[in-house]
Image (cartoon, rainbow, N blue to C red; front, side, top):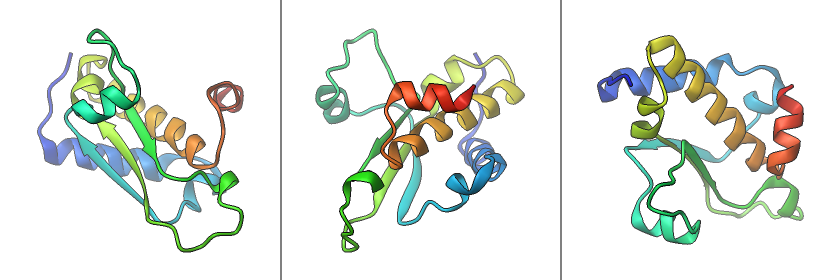
Length: 123
């Protein structure tokens, strides 16, 4: 496990986002990317997470594939969860890669991809 201050975590998140390949990552729009320490009670309940489960990230919004041309939609949100990512990382490089992987995964949900398709595109 590694522990970093909030400023470094935020910097690593920005670096990870900027390092994502392709136009899909560069073309996300109207999406707030934030971090929280861990999922809150409402998120845990909505996702039916057990006490021994957690998340690295969460996409909340209307995926592009389901908007049917609507343009007046509230901003989407991608939340990156700091504590679970720190617990899964042994050093700064690993933390940055875990953040990067999480961002890629949540951006996939923004485009309407399911877990299987996201994993397929990662390989």
